[in-house]
Amino acid sequence: MLIRKSKILADRADARAPRLSRRWLSVGVVGALSLTVVAATAVAPNQAANISTQRITETLGTPQFSVAASSDLPFVHEDRVRRGDTLETIFQRLGVNDAEASRFMRKSDEGRQALRQLRAGKPVTATVAPDGSLIDLTLPQTRGEDVFALERDGATFKAKSDQKPLTSIVEMRSGTIRHSLFGATEAAGLPDAVATRLADLFGTEIDFRTDLRKDDRFSVVYETLVQEDGRQSGIGRVLAAEFVNQGRRHSVVLYQDKDGREDYYSEDGRSLKQAFLRFPLEFTRVTSGFSQRFHPILKKWRQHKGVDFGAPSGSAIKATSNGTVDFVGTKGGYGKVVILRHRDKITTLYGHMSGFASGLRKGAAVSQGDIIGYVGQTGWATGPHLHYEFRISDTAKDPMSIALPTANPLSKSELAAFNAATKMYRKRIALLNPDREIN
Image (cartoon, rainbow, N blue to C red; front, side, top):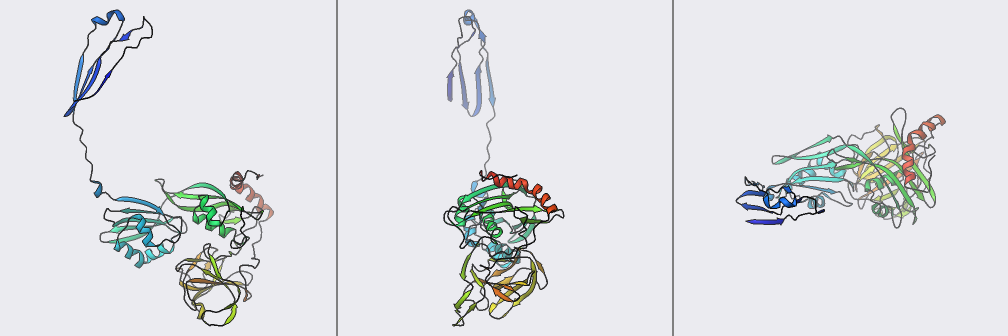
């Protein structure tokens, strides 16, 4: 069967140039491949009639192809956790239809812990059989480089937390507030985990409920963690950030001192580590402020000596500053409650919890941002929320309006080392703001 025929035309540069004798090239395929070529030789014009040709024929074996049926192959799905996600919505997007996998995630200690650490923006990877059964699942955890891994083991599953080698890639983003913080960060392509960290870092100086204005700006330099195969595996540290709120510039940068301890400082050397976060939850809404209110259960007016934050049951609650656990247990209308003791006779109270962080006990040291428990509706609560109190010498203060204490700044000698070590990060922030200069 002739599948292609082409003609080689003579190419004459001038009358004296040799030319290719005109011949036909044919390729035939019958069963096996048969390749036939008529050789052509370059000759002078007056020798064209006397040239000889040689036919070369070679038969090639028939190619053998073996392709497994596509219906027998598992699928690898990659997705990201979205705000408001549940195990069901995640499994639905991943194509997982596996009752045993769902049962393991909900009933086992490892599965429940992983579900508590679901955060918007985190990548999820699953290998799924054609019938929807789960083969394996990986989910990066909230802190560090731990990865929750779920693997099928016969008819059931086994879980492990692997410390996999990850590579960090430095990324930079900036944006302008148009309507809301999360709307602006999403438009800038900033992961939700980094947006939440911004609210944490600047929460001591900016009230994100009331202080935001249109055209406020933010810039951030942060790490993205990737696996050996290049797949993203979570978000690392925020290295530097800037927020311009109502014309006032606030900047922070990560600094590691001579003892290897990392902390966030303002550009003039003020530490943020001992400062108090205004929000003990990831950026959320206030459902009841520090004021006189009509109690929904007691049915009478009384002073509300804290702030209530509305959040889904199971949301992680964070310590707003460094301290020690003064009380962990059940206390009257507070339900399950944790009380932390901080410096300068300050205590914070976290009430109506559904449960406590693993290992939390009286006298234990906690750091700012550590998870201490989970949102619930224990005690006198009509719905899932966190009741948060801020006390100085056992007197309740409004945590949303009080001037929060800060740490002592770096000494002059330490400041010189700080400026040298953080100059690279501050230059990256300057790149995102052409009107700024870094000395």
